[in-house]
Image (cartoon, rainbow, N blue to C red; front, top):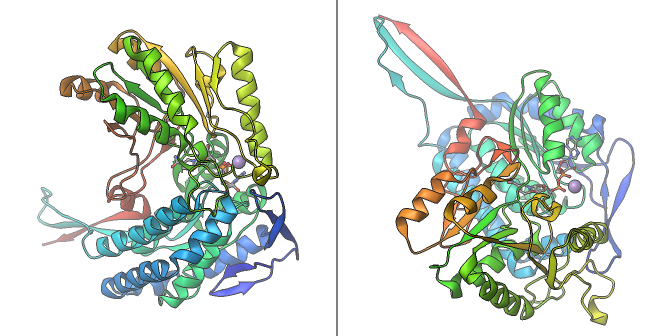
Length: 476
Ligand code: NAD
Ligand code: MN
């Protein structure tokens, strides 16, 4: 039984309630986790509030060393953390290992930023000296999703701690385990008790209580646009700072002059990584008409070689989805696409294998002849489903790409550098990649426009969201 983590200790939930975690690969219960509620959130926030002043006083060298030690401890526990993550989410163990490493990289990056980011002196007109201090915001309420649990937790916790804030983290109710381990490792790294607290629980109870708590000064939320909208409304009550990383329906634009061998493989992986449960999934592939038929054919051939298998199997390329319920929701979209008149070229069913019969598996699906207005071309399906749409001109490709309420990421494939830059400027997203499918470099800012979010994570850009600028003037 997993308890809450408050003030450097395992704490039983106020309600006495525990919820079952279901292994998505078997459908069997495999762990029980405390269901935190508003009382637990209040306790955790009070503790984070109490230690806030002490944590702020820790000097920059000591804080840097603590975050670096945490990164090393994460690497020391790479195998156990990756295994836990893989079992919990159903993602391939190889992907889980990369994400645990990314979490360690993230703590190292922000450890290094601590003594390099500060305020300014400003040449004001008045006689005297004007300068700014970059101060911590205070207690930060961090809310994480289930798709990349430890990685996204690190994206939030590392910069929050680096800037001298204290934290109450609410992991996704499905995936609380690696966050709880991380909090234990933080104590081993020398980070004082109470600086990082973890309260697993439902979004509607624990999550909402965290967003509403008057002692929480900042909320950083990653999840769906629907819940993000609600979080922003709740945060408005007392003008809490909010960062939102929300949904996406990103476009991958492939022009006829693209390196097709590369483009096909990357197009596949930039939608199928984490079985498509990725906010950055390029789930709309827009292909220039002269190469459309060939592209669909080659993409289908590539999908046919995918190794769908058990998450912990080293050879597995596509694991299972987060739950049977989510698999069924994705399957409904596959049904809908056919009803809407798109052509299901490949996949979409359950794999035929006794070994995979009880898990939340789905064979990745390709839809061709998709019209931009179809619901499968508009909704974030959040599963292994790709829509391939033809386009005739550069202007049409841009219009289709921007025909979305979302604006997170996207890719452009062409050998023509001028066109690449022209199209990159015209696409309404926060992140773009040219001739690759990459979304995340932890040194560079990451985030969305339109309904994909507010603010930026990663890079030095996020530090601004975990600090307040105080402007001080000394008269001479
Ligand atoms: P979700 O919105 O259902 O839940 C996200 C988190 O919010 C969970 O911890 C959940 O418990 C909590 N929550 C739910 N209701 C709440 C409430 N009323 N108040 C406060 N917290 C609440 O999202 P999900 O299903 O866990 O994750 C999938 C979604 O996340 C997708 O839309 C995906 O695009 C998005 N996502 C975005 C990014 C990004 O960086 N832009 C990254 C990963 C995932
Ligand atoms: Mn959800």
